[in-house]
Length: 456
Image (cartoon, rainbow, N blue to C red; front, side, top):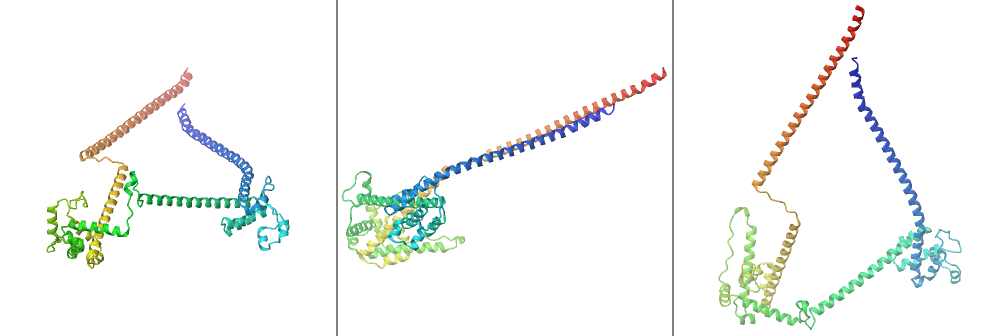
């Protein structure tokens, strides 16, 4: 009677092992079935692909042969080759050894036959393919290596190789022709537009009117530059009659001297050590009379030169703007301007000012475009929310509170699990004690029965 609990315990411990073994056998059987299914699928695919390849082989060969026939028929000097390729088109191309009566194209090149022999010897299929490859070397520009690759093949391989070469060469010819036609057409349209909008005698209407420039000769352009130079230097307060006569060399030298002084000042400021913290004194001008002339002209006409200045920045006088523009020139360029005289000097200084103004406008436009592109890229980037210090502290407080609450929950769950396990162990111990007590009672009852029987 005391062995029953022990046998029940053995049965409970052996049941998981039996379940594990069953699951292992089931998994092994599923793997075997999966591998067997994959092998069957591979066999079916291999059979299907083999049948498709064998069925499409003949169609591909017929298409390649059709390409050769069409190309040979399109050339007037290949009628004999086209006739040889057209014969027995229903028969697949097979490699046939060349007999003495049907020499190849290479043998014909080495030992050209006479007219009677050539007329009496018809071309075979392989001979026609070789001859076509030789003709394509001249008409399509095939290389010796490509022709040799065609000769090395036999039967369908030779036809397939030559058809691929012809397709590629004809495609490149069409592509080059299209490019040349397109380039010529674009050039024609550009010339037409340029002549119509800029150098046409009749001013175009509509939106193209702003591109129109009248036809000017070199003398007319020179006169226009001289008039523009005179208008510019008059805005500096200079005498119009002296400007028109070219007698402002002293004023131009003073203007160039100011630009050179600004260059030297900027160079000294760059060479100074930035850690010294010494303030660079601005360049001062005096004694040349340019400021008084400019002040007199601005008092007479306050809006002078406002159209040429940038309204977005702080407005500067025409004199200050001219000096700053000349400062951007190279030193050798300033030296060249100083050595000129008369009207040539006046015109050269004005053209330098106009060039520097164009460079400045171009750089400003490039910066504006770059800023616009940077703004567009920044607009595409995702925007992240910026938290204030109070919001960040509240977030961290909630995070700490959540972590503490999770820790308390884990501790509560651990305590409940421990109490539940202790309760189960206690119940098991109580049941075991009751079982032992019952078994001892049965054993005592069994031992007491024979004694009562013997006493009787």
